Length: 504
Ligand code: AMP
Image (cartoon, rainbow, N blue to C red; front, side, top):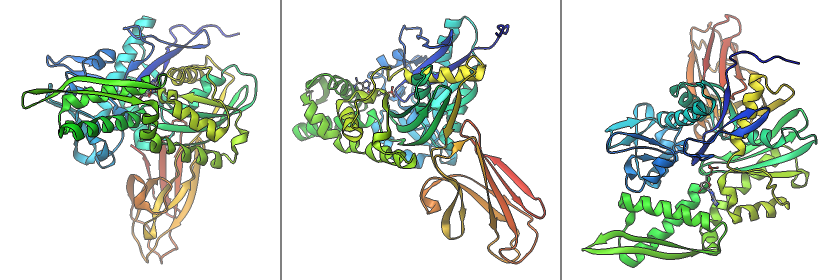
């Protein structure tokens, strides 16, 4: 039996969501949500700056979003760790301004503060709010956390999330995949061996993971997903419908009216949520704009059937990642014992129907899809803190990693769904006589062509010994740690010239 360690630091688990975030801890071995100061169990992932320069976070920021749309930042997780080029198509979806920064990165702009922020800075404010709520709960200062990310996040998205934690003053002890966290929360204390499929459809991302869980080993067999698929897309489909309907009737494009757009986005989300339980709902937005001194109103009915027709193409996009994960896990639909739902968007009846159609199984309803990821992060925090000692977690890397080779091709060094931590080495050679340096271009993705994959970094190995082409050998090793973060080492075999980089 162990005695308590005096002044042992608490580690919290944080689900930093696209729409909502949550924070949890282990209380006597049981994962428990920490309510926020306002009494909510989840906190809207929204940050706003008021006209008086005040920073508003969570519910209070959400409540004022209609009257302050250009200074209210939501769905920031869709931007984190991305280049401007990758999110161009998101620009019209939000009422705030997104700019391209140096290095082709992203900044959002607050007119009230006349200041730009990186997505990491905005996320760090959400994290700070969660931590302040936890500080109040424990009556002590929390400095260590496990933060979850979509399993399908690439290296730069993971690192940017970690950076948000650093900016918030946190020591991020582990970046944990959301579906893996959900499995930890679901499976903790279960005595049975089961194959489970975690179907995680949140506000902005979709993840599917297949795990084998037993009493003391949780092994991720495969993971797949789409970092641009979620409830925001459903909202957008309703927004487009409302706007084109209004445009047809009034010949006015409300897309250019920021305040009207923000009201429509809010009404669309509300209608979508109502349609999870109702067959029909009404969208009522009086005085949406004024044209030639005439006030204009929106008043339309949307039935569930209409909504389902608007989102049918979006829903279909969930099928391919499920099939791919099953294929990678070398399993068939019938091998899945349980389907666990995670994320608010799994409450949409059409999503459930798709799953029943695909897997011929009713999803498990025993856990709250909004809380399960934070609870699982708390379990991982408990493993790190040594409070849970008999659980081993084997996770995987979601996307293949490799280097660019001659002909603009990608040579894979670590294949997707390899168990992590892992290390693989490949030997490459020079392509011309007396070549003095080689370029190591690190890539992530599944395409044969280098240019179609994500570029994670480039470095040169210089002053190579001279020799005919093909005779100078270079070992390139890729090492992924438990956070899914990558260290690349290249070394020339005879001279020992070596260079390493951690992807940052
Ligand atoms: P999450 O990222 O897990 O917090 O999921 C948030 C997404 O779930 C948002 O797009 C919400 O609009 C959506 N959502 C929450 N509750 C419901 C509901 N009852 N029906 C449909 N969508 C919902």
